[in-house]
Image 1 (cartoon, rainbow, N blue to C red):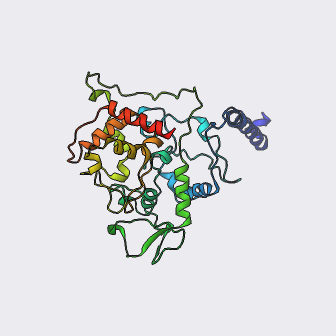
Image 2 (image 1 turned 180 degrees about the vertical axis):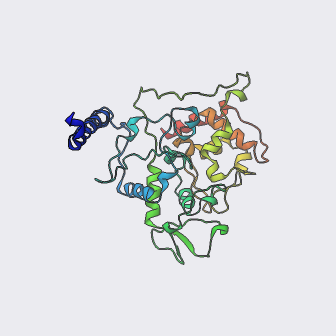
Image 3 (image 1 turned 45 degrees about the horizontal axis):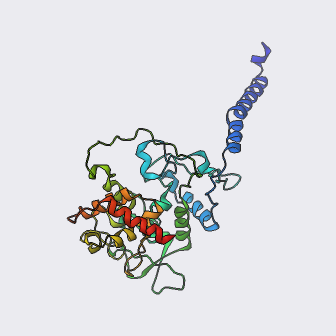
Length: 331
């Protein structure tokens, strides 16, 4: 029984058992996982600026409130086109020997998931304004502001990117310009896009999908237009459809929303819009997020019948015809 009375032997035995278990339970499976999970063909490595932005994302505490993982449940469908897989994180590497920040999947969703935010919100102007003052674009936001990523100038220099901040959130009349760090952080956010699966690969289906009520009406066959608006448009045009003065135009009472030029309307959704100097550039929301004819129809009908708007609803056949024409022109 000398073994149990000898603290050195007990310590060495316990340490040896711990190291063996660590190797078998943790290290071997990790090596096997690394060997069997390659990056998806459409994935690209982060650029230098995007990598610096990732470090700023960590340094400024963004990892505490934002996840980067679309779970396999239907309620997560708003964050990505499919559930996340191990291959989505295969390109991530350690920052250095001491810090293993390869994946930033996170543990808490105080803020929205960012897995596909590069497609969901690709606007540079929106992202910069959101960093400077989150409540300028999302009134109920509890995210802290990051004004130290910006500077005030009386005159702009070549290459400066000014952000249009509503008067309510200004302390002076000087121009507010994004620093290099703000642009790097936004570059990282814009790089967060779910990669396409290889041709022929079927994405995993979300669990617990809500069953649609089956009614024999054209309207019931369409998806929820309000949900599509919230996921793709609300961050800029706001929940009340009034947009933000000097930044994003209003949809409430908009001549484009209420007008009869459906081709222009669908073109703006699918290809974006940059024809009015007083507003930020609108990205190609429809193309970036691969909205179907049914989704675009539901979105248009929601916008044409909300916030006091009252315009004739459109059919998916009309919208599909215009989208086919856009696709043909693109080719």
